[in-house]
Length: 324
Image (tube, rainbow, N blue to C red):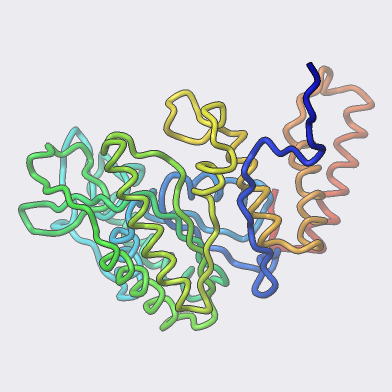
């Protein structure tokens, strides 16, 4: 039996990604990325291609209140002291920062927090774009002093109250972030996105509720603010890729292939043709630097290294900020 197969048959749902016509990102841009672990993945791409970027100065921040607190602290130049850190599991921690900043030495942690506050304010004053990736609307409130923390640092759960931020609370947090940054830097542009990472520890239904609150709040903000845009990372994974082969082994995080696909979509949306040309040159050099020869003393390899150095010098001459 023969079946008619239409030539326009499409085996996936394509998520439309809007091409930005103004305020695009190029090698003159200064990009600050804040938010969830997915921000780390995209930030890694920016770093690989040698854009002028700063990624999560206080480490991964999963929810909007944590990002709001960071921006507030930076704008107000908060000074962290001994009362702002605590000791548990053989390390000193801050409830306002990710565990990657934690340290066995109390003074080192406090100095790092204060240094990063100053650096964050400088980045906010000078950035052209702020990319904010929200991971969850679930937050933990430390009962002892009634404040929402950025990270629990494995402190016993009985010391916290778990809460779901409402759409209104998230919207107010995002508006506060934008207002604080615009007071320092009126020309900053914002790109909001929702992480496709599934927070299944909260529960499947709870994760869906959380993502829906984030999405609704972001769109309320974007719809009423010309300096804000939305990039559909979440929808690309949920609707366009839509297959477990695009997840890592934990079935929670997107796979490298999925991240590459999202990055391509982001580039197509936010970068112009001149930027793509430079990115190709950077990638060629990066692959050359990663190359491992069979014989490092061979004439062919030495010639290859000389050519690579010439390409690097030419690109650095054109874009002095780039460092390999």
